[in-house]
Image (cartoon, rainbow, N blue to C red; front, side, top):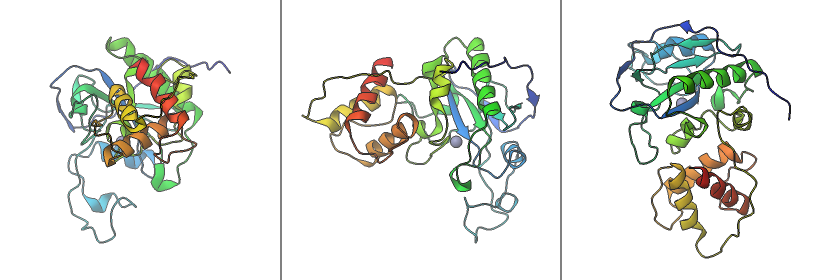
Length: 263
Ligand SMILES: [Zn+2]
């Protein structure tokens, strides 16, 4: 394994967004996103726009017959990390930024209230899933280390994907995001190799228990319902991206056991 030398954050570029309100609880989570837009300038404009309308943000995310003056949701994030590694600060960490939308983690439906949101500039699935750059990943690692220093409740176990907290709506930061590199740098987690004895009794209930233990919004129905399938795909997208079919297989079960033990 190559040792990755990551420099500490030396500069935050101030790009204030008016899109925030007061936190209703303390910070204990970080949510990673991709911007999913054509470039950093457009994403920064959108994330700081106090009154966004559809006509100003044309793209594959809206139908051609959308009215140009239709209002769009006001959104923001605490940070945007550009492809060259520049880090923009949009909302002070003390405030509640609007990045996660309808979401749930560990049974809590207001993820924005408890999390710091980081948007990573990348076109995402609408733009053929470009690679993240090395400079950008180094900057994300340095930013997370800086954030961990400021908030004692945050550590490698407290960093999640937008797709983890909203698996039925979101795919970001996407299956190309290098979670394993983040784990090697100590700012995320990765399943340890494991060879647990797998029972054949009721794998669906077992998977639901482990997904819920990790934090996913899954009920113990014993059936492969939509929420369970979506969470399983989100889990695979992050930890086993070579196959994200949402099916229960032995490798996925082993990884779920390993991650549930960390939770
Ligand atoms: Zn997102």
